[in-house]
Length: 402
Image (cartoon, rainbow, N blue to C red; front, side, top):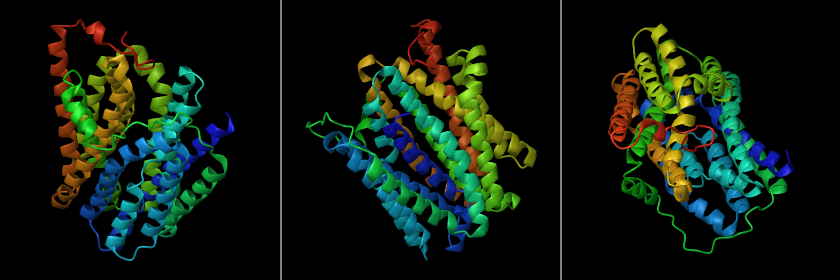
């Protein structure tokens, strides 16, 4: 691995680890400030809103002025955001910290563009982008586990650590990351964050898939933001136990994506079948997590982890395979915007529901996924009257129709 790729890999990994570190201690820290589940979920939503608004502008700017300055600004905003968050004495300062981070949340998208720039051919580009997914898996194993250990020492220590890691990340990027975008785009910048959403609605062929991805984002974010506080409220877990549990989930996700997906799921199932099966498994997983029996809750976690990790790969591949060759990049961008919108809506609904009855966010998320299953099932039934099923099967590795 060359120095550029190694540096950007370390940059992404430190970002993901920093994000994972704070998760186990977040409910205890917010509670210490006098907040509840509503404030905790709104902290996630306000970050998602700021990120949704800023990402298109940062992406366009990176095409115009280069990747390096945008990446440096994004990492700096993460550092300042977490340090403000860690030093907070009142709830409004917590929100300020997340707003600062979200207003320049271009770390991952710019890192992806950076890896595309340095790729010598299509194969290397695919491998570089696949590396991002692997780093996410590793980061969400290390981050929550480390966060649980730090949180058992002090509720604020994980947030200080995340901020300091971002500062170190910024220093490394400043000295070791050169500019890679030598073909600047002088054209007019499209920075309207709702433009991809409008394009999604206009694309009648892929609209059902975009709706499913929106519901997927609402479901996963709606559960993710209340997971830690639910573990604490229902089972009495502290930050260490929550961190270990989240780390185990990260291990299962990484194992499923990197090993079991190719050796089992893709060997014995066709991709369209996998999408339907995993949507059902995912829905029942969340439904089980909403049940009163602890054994069903942990069985539901297992189902949801396996289903989600397979769905992210298989569903995205099917959508890209169905897209016209000239607009595959645009479709990827639309998928990103759609799931970002879902990550705003999901937490906004989960917080009030959690206060009313703490298992309802799981039931609601199960409902989103059941609706997704019926949407794609009906869509494929209609397609059968026009296109034979084998023509819509997509290879999950290449992204091309079989």
